[in-house]
Length: 139
Image 1 (cartoon, one colour):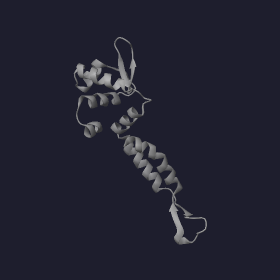
Image 2 (cartoon, one colour):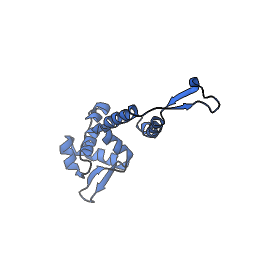
Image 3 (tube, rainbow, N blue to C red):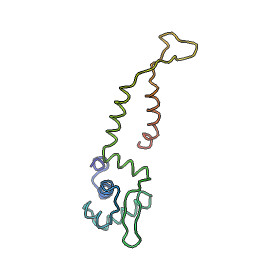
Image 4 (spheres, rainbow, N blue to C red):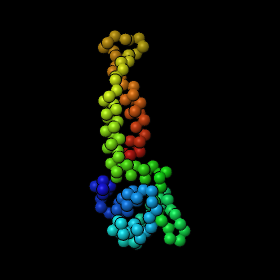
C-alpha cells in the first residue's frame, strides 16, 4: 500500500491499487467498487478519468471491464512502486556495482602520471547513464 503512503488514502488510489493487484485481469465497475470499498459512482468517475488519459484498456461494449494498460509507462511505474520491485532492483544494481572492478583511465592523453589518473568504473557509468531517463521520468 505504498501508493496510499505517497498520495493519501483516496478513492482513485484505492482503485489503482486494485487494478495493480489484478494486473492481468479485466475488472468490472462492480468488482472494483467491492474490492476497493469505493462507491460505484466514484468508481465510474475515476475510471472515466483514468481511461481518458490512456491508463486503462477497456474490454466489452455494454458491460465494460477495465485493466491497467500494460504498454503505458505510467501504469508500469505505478506497479513497480506499489510492488516495491524498485527496491529489489535498486539493491540488485548496488550489489552489481560493488562487485565490479574499477579501471584506471588518464584524465588526458598527454598526462599519464599517477596523480592525473581518474578511477573510473566504466560499467558503473554505463549502468548509471542507462538509469537516468527512467529516474527523470519518475521525478
